[in-house]
Length: 247
Image: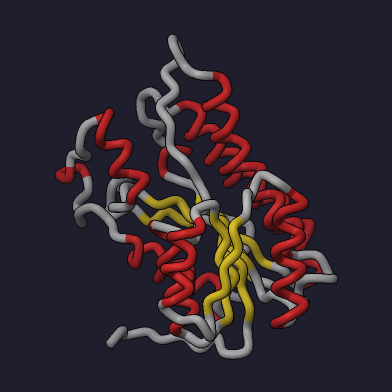
């Protein structure tokens, strides 16, 4: 049994990147805590598998977070059936090497579209009065690469840095309605995404992480705290969770 348990009964959340990794874990943890969660992703089969794990609490929709219309359609249908949302988590992302001398411009732009603009669109939708209660709590995923960028990842690092900076301005704009928004910057977490990175960049040197490589649940634990009322005085900041990497 976990030392800390949350009760999100009667609350609704939207999570992008729900088909794998940290996003998937957040959906499962919120559902286990009683929330009704709309999981968004592009992989329909993975979403169906996720929904089957808790069909009463997990709802899913195939959605491209870079498409404003798709997000609004998905969130609008969810709200019509289950009520207004209490917050969102932007965990959708991709990871593509972009070395300066030979990067693919289309690939580099897709990183900014997914990580940054996708996060902006999701936050915009999930804080509108027609879709959201007053006083929502939302989390977007940045990365420690925004602070100490890895070689050949300039586009990914820049997108994550932009998102963490945008959160500061959004927090000030949204505060009058009681909305909170925070960015979280994980270190190396064992997910499908980082596994693909390892295939061309080599395995992570685990010794640089004093507490070892992270797991999705390590980050999800922090995110649930930030979504809860226990974090009611936290907004507009970035929180690093990296197993001591930056110490």
